[in-house]
Amino acid sequence: MLTVIFLTSIVGIFANRKDGKIQENIPIISVLNNYEDLNWYGNTINARSRSLAFVWLSQLSDSTMYKPQGYSAEKIKAIEQKYQKASQILNTERTNKIEEQTVVYILSESFSDPARVEGVKLSQNPISNIQDIKNQTTSGLMKSDGYGGGTANMEFQSLTGLPFYNLSPSISVAYTEVVPKMNKFPVISDQFEAKNRIAIHLAAPTNYSRNVIYKSLGYSKFVSLITKGLDVHYQGVNYSDSSSYQLILDNIKDSQNQFFSVMTMQNHSPWKEEEPNNIEASNSNFSSDENDQLTNYTRLLYHTDVATKDFLNQLSKINKKITVVFYGDHLPGLYPQSAFKNNPDSQYLTDYFVWSNYETPKLDYPIVNSSDFTALLLEQTNSKVSPYYALLTEVLHKASVDKKDLDEEGRQIAEDLKLVQYDMVAGKGYLSKDFFKVHSE
Image (tube, rainbow, N blue to C red):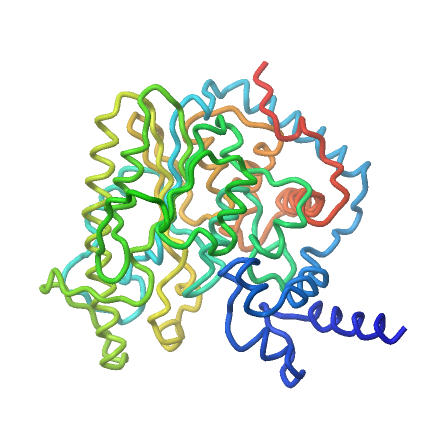
């Protein structure tokens, strides 16, 4: 009986976490949980560092998402029927299939234009090429869920279309706290053959349990820091963006339609770069150390800019359809909070663009969430949608983060998404397989 009471108390402590933290002054547990954020290491290393019991109790206690009002099998069936009809309407005008081209998702580590931060002065524009690309393509700003971190959560959202803002506030890392409990894990790469799904991230494969995640998603290849025979080089203290881009080019097959999930590392902290030495960045309200970091970061952005232009030029020469979704995951954590005093939202806005090596329309989506990217991709490429992606298309159009005040229709669409998301991450799994299939007839 005492054991049951003890375990119930511990589970209750974990269940009341906020932003991944529990209340202070609880012996042992507060130190294990709060002292250092180890979630990004993945569950295996967390179990070694904090104990298997700690990880088990943490997962047991997590309420991944609050149950939406009206959740039931009947409600989910009605939503399926609603978006089955919506997909049929969309597909009468869409002529392409996304799996008939190659798609590259590039999460560009900490990429965000420093000129948007109030008071920052630059000796020259470090990202002129990318700004030119943005001017010619569907592009804008992405609203990140965090400042200075949260990479894996942006990755999760962009692949699944499931927004982090619908999850419980206690959730810190979706890959380690949500995915293990999901009864359905929908990702855009499902549209491609398993042999043609490739992940690239020049870091430890166990970070955020990516090795487990990508294996469960059927990826045939995961190029990571421990992959043998890598021919890569550094830019600053991390592996260069040009190295990540070259790995994409090395793995592209002319005769196959592929999906690449790529996370770069170059612009991750710490920031140290001496060239080009004519690039300087500063803010009169920053400390000397903060300005040094800002200058180093800005120089690294210059190298990203040059490498990205060269990479897209290389893709332009390949004789098959290719589309690239490029986005920064969050701002670098080098800015003091005072920099955002007059414009708090600016600490969460990064850059994105969607580029194709063939002619596509330039769509107008000034601000998106990372969970909007697949719906946006399918619209830009005029690709057919499943009922699930019809729902995400409606969210993009009428209920995403750019809408400050939702109208009645937008509120209903947002509620539909909550119900569908809950069914996948914490519910009974009522959704049928047909909800995720593209019916092009």
